[in-house]
Image 1: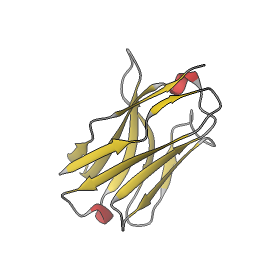
Image 2: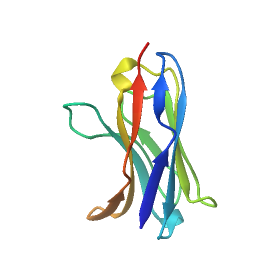
Image 3: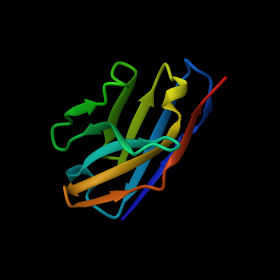
Image 4: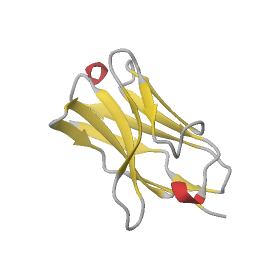
Length: 116
C-alpha cells in the first residue's frame, strides 16, 4: 500500500496550487480519501474528504469556498485544488486512505508554504 503526494511548493498569498495523491496497492475506488494538514507546532487537522462510492465531499470551515477535493478512480488519484491561498494555509499536507475507521494509510506529506 502506497500513497505518494505531489504538487506542494512555495506560493504567494492569493495564489493557487493543486496537490495530487497517487495510490497503489489497494482498490482505490472503494476507499474514502481525505487530505489533512499539519502546521508547525500544531496538531494534524482534516482539510477535506471525499467518500466512495457517491463522492460526497466535506471541508473544514477554514477552507470552504477556496479548496476543492476530487478523485479520478481510473487514475487512482485524489486531488486538492487550493485557491486564494493564505499564509495560515502553510503546512505539510497529507493524503489519507481509509478502509475502515481503524484501517487507514498515510502518505509521506508535501510541504505547502504561502508567503510573499
